[in-house]
Length: 111
Image (tube, rainbow, N blue to C red; front, side, top):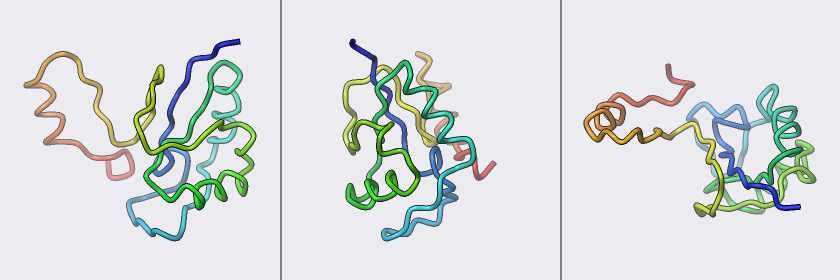
């Protein structure tokens, strides 16, 4: 059965990242994230989207019990139905509005 793919960012979406990047450490899972991913995986193929080291990210998935729910880890913009990220802006067709959104952008944890 074919299922659409959703790419979900790791830092700031699935974990408790607050902007203090450490190359050797991935913060713990965000409250409610496992339940969210579990529910989403009933209808969609879920891939982890991260620029972090793939081995470190794999170990994090195992530690947090998500390794059998998330099908792959990628750092490329794979073909997918949706991308979920804490650092993105949805383009609405208007470049002036987009420019303003870019200039005023803050991730959710800095609002």
